[in-house]
Image (cartoon, rainbow, N blue to C red; front, top):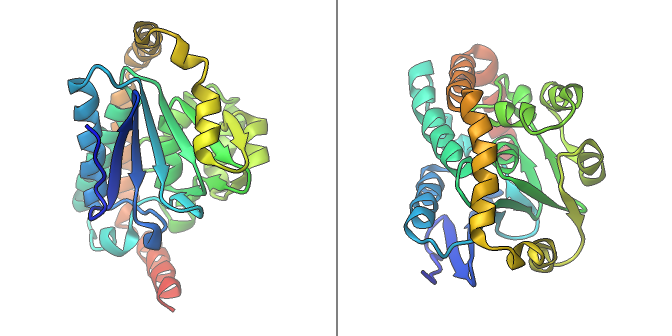
Length: 261
């Protein structure tokens, strides 16, 4: 399974039980496009087909961005609620598949994680955040809500409900110290993200994978009882409705015009 896909929008590496998925679109601040979505789908399949995978790591290329969310330069072409729902539900379903994997999932947040990037990180079991990184659910600044299920994952994450809700309605970024204070960040690190990861999993490595699988099953049983997938899809429907609003279209046009200058 050792492979690097340099020509694609992502890279997949496997070393000693650790499967690492890197969004490799540094020039786009590691924004998610259709190709990245398909890459995420590939790692889900890989983990279920290869029982030797012990951990899934999601990170971004470079040092500036973990993931800036969906690539608006591509997805802005989706004008209607129906079209938006198609894209949002595709990524939302894939993210749910990642969130419900039987192995521990770790977001190795090397830089900014905003919008959908913050949703991806929230859906992971653990979040290791670089000291200078900023993260936030900024979707509200674009006239929409979280569209891949991130709001639902956040409200079920164990954060105090007022902190979680404020993180959503603020629609702004938080620094690493604040993220750790409220309980969103599992750890904060400085320097090498690889060293930070190794330090974090050193004790987990000593435990048999069957134990990890059992604890994940306990967590996911609770999610099933709470109808998590159905709630995620309802969240996506709300975002799709807002997607075709004038407020969203105008906000994205302003963003793209600013980005192109």
